[in-house]
Amino acid sequence: MDKKPFIIYKSSAGSGKTYTLTLEYLKLALANPGAFRQILAVTFTNKATAEMKERIVKELVRLRTTVNPAEKNG
Image 1 (cartoon, helix red, strand yellow):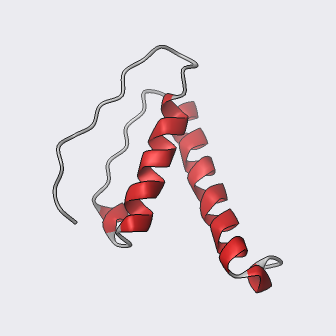
Image 2 (spheres, rainbow, N blue to C red):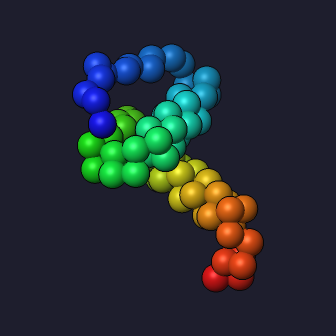
């Protein structure tokens, strides 16, 4: 993975920063399978961190079951 400059998202509460961080994380991680070890996503609350993690995991599960429907029950 090529090293890229930091991307900083600054905006007010409720504006979608967690959604944007989740989307950017997934784009990077899916484009470069080993990249998750080199991605740093920082939020300022434990609640936002938990929400971002939950969204990432849910989306990865959704993608897995969409790509391989046989795993839907597993």
